[in-house]
Amino acid sequence: MDLIPSFSVDHTRIVPGIFTSRVDTLGDQQVTTYDVRVTRPNREPAVDVAAMHTLEHLIATYLRNDPDWKDQVIYWGPMGCLTGFYLILKGNRKPAEIYDLMLRSFRSVEDAAEVPGASPENCGNYLMHNLGMAQWYARRFADYLAENAGNPAILEYPRAGRPVTGDGREFYDS
Image (cartoon, rainbow, N blue to C red):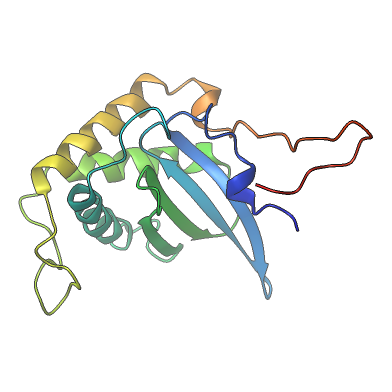
């Protein structure tokens, strides 16, 4: 059985950044899943759960209201490991082409005075939000993106190699 694409990334070498996770064709439309990695997996603590939830609400709202991008957004949500988010967009753009969108999205969190959709009618866990921590993570990530704008490591996955047996067969267990 083949490893899914996100398990073929070397999580010991990945840095925060924006990466293409996969490109799929659905009918006549291409869609791209981006890995928006906010912390270094297995080296930094995962993002606080309440802050992650707040970032999900704030950035999803921002993306779905951006006049240039709202019709391209299919999904924005957290990774199970809580080290980043998945963004699914119509089309197939390089991570560099969505860099400004991600930078603006995370910068927009700094100005938030409240969390959209954080009521019992709109959210399945409306009490689990932390705006202050979300703003801290957003500022930290946006500053990191800005400081590393010319660094290709923030836009290209380090790939994990598949172990090979002595006789040349690939090992498929993750």
